[in-house]
Image 1 (cartoon, rainbow, N blue to C red):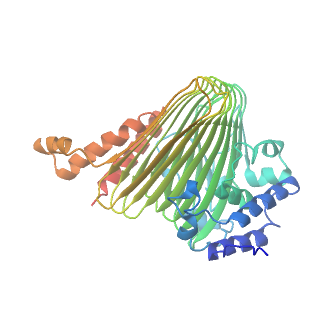
Image 2: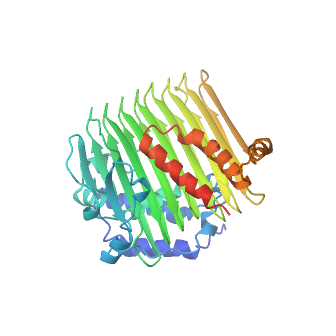
Amino acid sequence: MNAEVRAIKTPAEQALGAAFAKARGTLPGKGTIAAMRADAFNQFDTRGLPHRRVEEWKYTDLRALMRDLYPLAPSPDPSARERAKNAGKLLGGVECRRLVFVDGAFVPDMSDLTSEPGIAIDTMANALGKGDPLVAAHVGRAFATDDVAVALNTALMSDGAVIRISAGATLRRPINLVFATGSDKPTSAFVRSLVVVEKGAKVTIIESHESGDAQVNAALELVVGDEAQVDYIKITQARALHVGSLLATVGARAHFNSFAFTSDAQLVRNQSFIRFAGEGTKAGIGGVSLLRGKDHVDTTLLIEHAAGHCESREQFRAVLDGESHGVFQGKIVVKQHAQKTDAKMMTRALLLSDQAEADNKPELEIFADDVVCGHGATAGALDPGLKFYLMSRGIHEKEAEALLVQAFIGETIEEIAHEGIREALMIVSLRWLGGRS
């Protein structure tokens, strides 16, 4: 007789089950959407929250870190909207079309909904409710993954943006999706967005998350058509728990750039699943993380080269102070028929404290024989020779360190094409450096 062994559910896992049971009847979408939700929740219920024995989550044991679940956020009332009125000000000097979500719900009066040729905007809640064909065709399909955090987002997704950029359109202003918390009590939110960029279109997309005492599970599905040009920037500032997922499929002869900027983040995992599905695509994927105190930031990346003659460059840098913990996990997978792939990945960590910890794990998984691929990782302190040189010229020790750190991260931030966004992130970086004790 074989006894079935079942893991004891944690309080957070029990609370997630209760939250889904209570909310499933009111969540937007019926029929196939409801079935997709139920299937996704069953995946989570079977496996539970990811933990250190799951290789992809080895360094971020969510089962241990997430003690309980905050209540699902209600629709924002006027006071919550007032508290979130400054959301997106980090890019205040950048001319953007801002779409604002407070506590996971779209706020029209805080958003720019002016009409513009080549773009169609809807909310995820509305699109799910009316059975939008665009949502039916792409939600849950942009990049098929068995990741538990994505499954949990699918089960409980409430609102977000649905954006369609028409073929051949060139948008002058970046689109800034701003997600902020306004509740004065701890809450949780599960937001899902879909952006479809059709053939030959050009657009810059910014996803900004500014959360206080909130647990956020966010996912963005991005479908990039053939010959399109897309720049995607994600900015994360979260003082509680943030798990973000980018699920992207890129077509042929496209240009795709992605950049993740994280600072003032207590517990963050940003994971990207990107598939190059068409030949001749070029991509630049990078990021900068600034950590201090006991911050924990996990950047996990899966790049799948599923078509030949594609080029990708991955470059990530992290600065760690105090007792912070930085994680980078990057894997490049080259499929059997993806010949002539050119992919290179590099991650560097700069440790400003003896108590800081950096875990870097770049990987290659290659099934083709005519490729050029490589990866590397470094971790270390500031160069004492360079620091001494600056101090010998009369520069104070902290200012000398700041100049060296600025040079370290600036090389990566300079890869951002949009000048205004590039300058805004450098200003944030300088403020972070100025806040070091």
